[in-house]
Length: 127
Image (cartoon, rainbow, N blue to C red; front, side, top):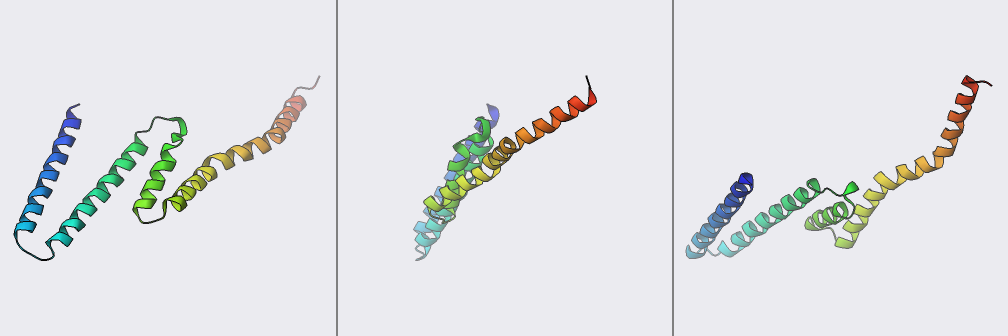
C-alpha cells in the first residue's frame, strides 16, 4: 500500500510541475507557448496511457489474458496512429498465430502420436 502512495504522490507532483510549466509558458507571452504546451501535454498523456496499458497487460490474471491482450495491443497500435480496426485485426491475428495454430496442430497430430505410443507399448510388452 505504501508503494501505491509513493506512486500517486509522484504522479500528483508531476502534474503540479506540469501546471507550473503551463502557467509560466502562458504568462511569458511567447507566441509558440500554446503549441509547446499542447505538445508537452500530448506527449505526457501518450506515455502515461502506454504505461497504463502495459501495466494492465502485465497485471492481468485471466488465463491467457483473453480480451485484455487484444484490447491493449489495439489501443497501443491506435496510439501510434494505426486505425483501430486494423490494429484490432493485427491483435486478433497475433492471438490466432500463437494460441490457436499450435492447438490445431496438436489436435491433428494427436491420433498419430497416440498410435505410435500404443504400438511402442505393445511391442515392448508382448503377450
